Image (cartoon, rainbow, N blue to C red; front, top):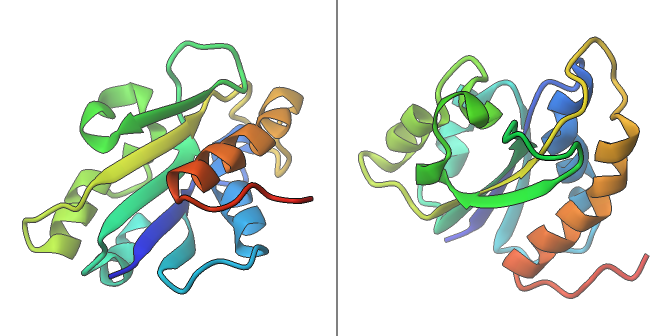
Length: 151
């Protein structure tokens, strides 16, 4: 059973697309077959089939938690509710998607969020969020028990 890493966000809204940017970088690495990276963007419902049978899920997304822009957070999905977690605002609630995928059973889900600086029309990340990408990727590698990136 695989570990699924979901990159969420709208890359047309600047820092809101940080999860998509992060997954694209992780997809370049030589990962074990037991880890699947999915660039979901805002099409969370499209991930239902991929999530079925997942052993665990890791979500990468922007997260407003009133920290400094670029702050990296790690929290369990059950603590990620309401307007502080952008992961639940992509057209279809991530909680419902996980229930659909697991037929009522949700695997362990960890959310890695990055505090955005700007959420406006741009395909580029703000400087603080761009500078936070290495820390985000290192945290995800640690969670997946992968060796640190050599680049």
